[in-house]
Image 1: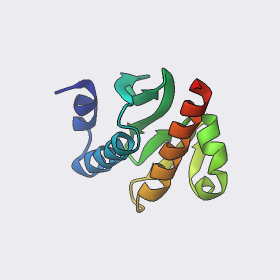
Image 2: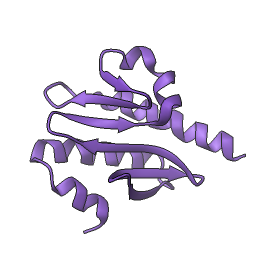
Image 3: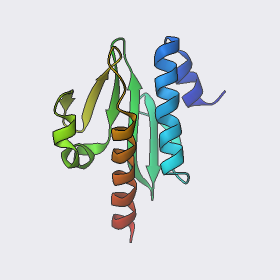
Length: 116
């Protein structure tokens, strides 16, 4: 079991399923991303730069897509509790997987353009 599997396994089944779906989205959109545990949570890097992180909590899943990833989608994220570079998706609401995917796509493109 790798570090990310180990991290996810510590949560209730419902949260595990959500985090595995988010993990699958990242791997699908960014197959070359380096997966690791950073800041105590699953994280991904492309071109040596942070891409996104996610974390499980009692009542929500946190997504950390750096400030730029959140600024770009500010309107769609406005209904969720946020911090600078973070957003909380409540576990008692439908998970916005399409939005998460679009954020990851944006971050992949952003890291690629900075790497050139």
